[in-house]
Image (cartoon, rainbow, N blue to C red; front, side, top):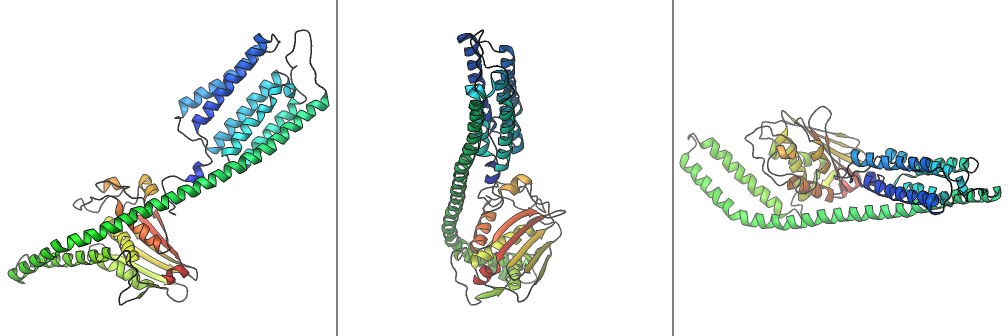
Length: 437
């Protein structure tokens, strides 16, 4: 899978949505308010009514601040989410302190923030939150105001019963925390696997469609291209070698030949027919890819070095096309030079293509390799061309096709900005896979 796929699923899996926390806290505020008001006015039990509603009002104020500070769809950093859930444990503990401590039947609600943490946050943060809840409930077992009761009477439960409630809460923290985390982790793994499968299937579907379009385009363009070649040949013959346009006609004839080569390549992308030269060394592979780009004013520097024998791979039209697309883009957007560096070890084969252009903008870099990332214009692609005269129109499919074809050969492709300036594309194969190709 690509390393830069828009959203890091593993990262977002451990981030709580603000809307989720706010809604749950409003539910807690309503429930706590109803419980306090019911005890005070419905049962006519004496309790510190003002202090209790002051503590509840703090939760309501926190909700208002979160709504103002963050959009509803925002996801909180795990540290901030842990602090907010820690506040919920503290707020409930203060309410329990004012209303009888662990004698209060609502003391089991201290499990709720820990369960929420176990569902989303990393395990060690849930462990810290559980330890915090353990410390507070231990204190509530011994230090609290009297349990609200009938006026003139005091209800005091025996110490063994209080200790039993304490043990029940601690066992609940441990069991529900671990159980919730295991269930949520399995659900996350399944969701990640399904998302990864959908991405692969979507990319393969795009490529299958493009394979058919490429063959159709090669067939349809063959006739007009042959006509163009015939007209150019006749013009060249009529003009003669001394005509002022002779050089331009020679260049046009050369580019027509290049177009024919591209069409021939498109028709063979899905095949493994290697032709008469069945195998290429890594250096020959690079030369074949870089050769068509040497006619432009940007020089290409190639370095090849490694440990032991130079790796050899089978000729693969798809791989040649993909690497050629990367080199073509590097030449297109470079200011002064393009560098291709190849290195091999006993385990890996690495190819790096670097240019000294402006590089990728962060938003494009995150989505590079997806189909239809770009729209018309090079500036929309996050890259500025060397010349304003260049035709920058495109649909953003070139990088997607190149990436998918290269990954079919067993390689991993990464796109980054080079230190200093420019773009850097790295292609890494396991050596065994590269030579098997």
